[in-house]
Image (tube, rainbow, N blue to C red):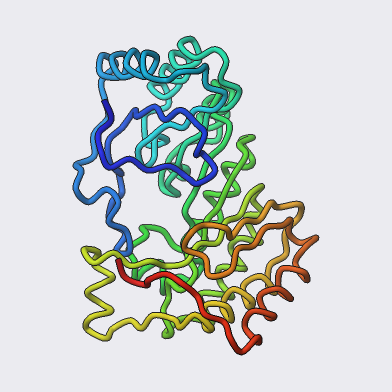
Length: 288
């Protein structure tokens, strides 16, 4: 009883996914095709109760972690989200963590008090796709916010007491905005100073609007070596405190893991070693 397709962050692989909405309330990002086949809607209480009943009959063990799907459960009204959190906790009392995606607009539209109430109700970890720190790139991909709004959203979540995870998509600005994307993304992530930061590489789906830009020559994908150069530039210009860093998604050319800024020099040196090896042969495709 899931409405497919279904997505979750890589770190939620072992979590029980409870689907409280369908699709994404923003759903305008030109690089993303994840929820384009769905019309956004909030599930009714009856639907969620039936969904939970099915999950309890299907899931063979008591969950320790729960992820609220689909794209951004935080778009729900505060009172409704708190009711859902209380209900889910009562149905799965062994769960020690509940998490969800969070769109920057949803964070900005919530008051500080509302976010604190939601955090106190049990939503602990939020994932936000920053995607890029460049205003030009954010506008190009129709992310819906600018650089300062992205920073404000992240800081607001952390101030409210959430554990906060940010993502940047390497290569999203193409060769046209490679340096700006790297430097401005480093600026935004440093300003937010999240608990977790992930770096993924752009994989363009054929049906996405961004794929048409590439076919028309409006945007040019980075070569594998340019991706490494962009990653190096981004990491070199980040200033973070005790931030867990991961670039070990299947999309990444070089798998990386560490803590920033503590391991920055090591991570950058490893990327340079691959870049300068002379026989770097990445696998994978740029367009699905």
